[in-house]
Image (cartoon, rainbow, N blue to C red):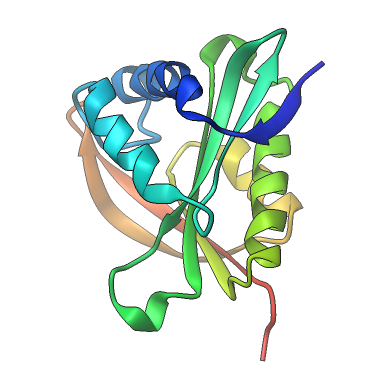
Length: 165
């Protein structure tokens, strides 16, 4: 059984470990080098109530996490967030990513966000499907926007609008 709950600073080592595995082995993020606990602590402490971080936990172990991030520093984007989520490689394919995305999307709407954006690297069809299942729409593709593993990657933009005009 997996429980989704708000993240605490005690979860940060697991969050960092999961993210660093994705950094080293996937094109889901365009960092090249693993991040330090200290840099992740700064990231974690910045989030707070408006930009929540949640974790999926099984038998006391964090097996995935999701975060709502600021889309831009420009004030006109204050009601737009960007979502990201990562699942421990041994737990992928068990519905955890779907649960995290669904929970954080609902929390974003309840927090008053107007729209949420997600950037997904080409080839991550599972993530695109999870987003579309929850009502996110493909709004465009940035061609060759990221370089990783000596390859240029297209990045798909997906969006959900909570209160369409």
